Image (tube, rainbow, N blue to C red; front, top):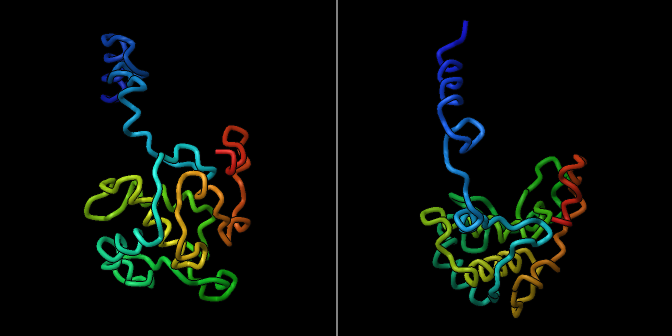
Length: 178
């Protein structure tokens, strides 16, 4: 005896054109998918054009980030972003961008897609580069006069980069290549 949902699926498969696996929906064209394809891979694939300075990031951070993450990235309502160097092997590790995250490009990707909390994806590429530069500066990874762009962001070597293990599945491949 077929369950009601199995009967419905079988009926739809017989009636619907081959629009999708289950006969529902419309295949997306690359043009329609492109605005949603904003992820940045650890190796820097899909980083947009633009640039941002630590100084511009400092001003942006004060206006849009400090209320949740603290004036110096020490945390508050939001996660702590700075500090924690050398604590990962301790009984109370402090996981921050500078102590835990393996790739600076991941920081760019996260800010671009999820911040600020009240208006995700509202920052321009230049603003995301600037915020990323400032947070990396707070962690001692960039000098005060630094400018980040797609090329220089790929070159930032995070302290815990070797603390992660690549995914061994053959369909995924090495992380740095993505």
